[in-house]
Image (spheres, rainbow, N blue to C red):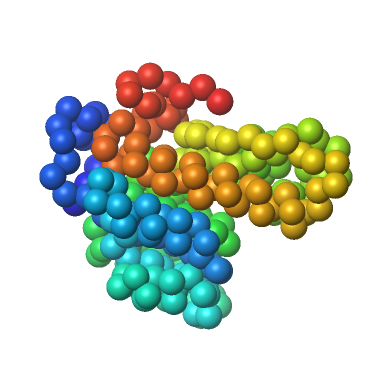
Amino acid sequence: MCSVKSSKAIEALSLVKLSEPCQLVVLISGNGTNLQAIIDACAARTFPAKVAAVISNEPAAYGLQRARDAGISTHVIDHRKFDRRTEFDGRLKNLIDTLEPGLVVLAGFMRILGFDLTEHFLGRMMNIHPSLLPDYPGLNTHARVLADGMNEHGASVHFVTSELDAGPIILQKRIPVQPNDTPSTLAERVHQCEYEIYPRAIAWFATGRLHLKTSIAYLDGAPIKA
């Protein structure tokens, strides 16, 4: 298990070959296509991570079935059953802690997480976002890009902080916006970017090459420049 408790621990991991895959807990809310890309990547014997569990706030999320089909443990915490956001966050934090992951992966998880939870997993939680951050945080990124007449679009992997979609960027992939693009066609091409770069960023973390230190993402000891 890749258990990362501090930046020193992460740096130490880069000096040794990990004997066991980094255990991932993946949070989803919907179809789970990014989850499937991660599951497929983990199926390779050389991939340094393994999905240990999947958690959803939506009981009907199809991604849960994807996990079950792959023999992965699933859990549901329905946010509608909590009167306060902090209560949901607390239940989620406690469940993740019992699973003891090396990394928490947000893959289409459509809940804003509070300060206490994000600070608890700071440096051990990452997210994929369908835009070239810091541009277009939040929802409806494809339609907004088209409305603004942008020439390029893409996807970003970033560490999660308490500020929405504003954590240190780890990896991005850019694509050109075509004259005949619609939000749906653009979304499909951005999805392909996500399926490529998210497993790559996870592998960097799992092998100790990637870590967060003083609000800066480092790869192989050097700060990552946006």
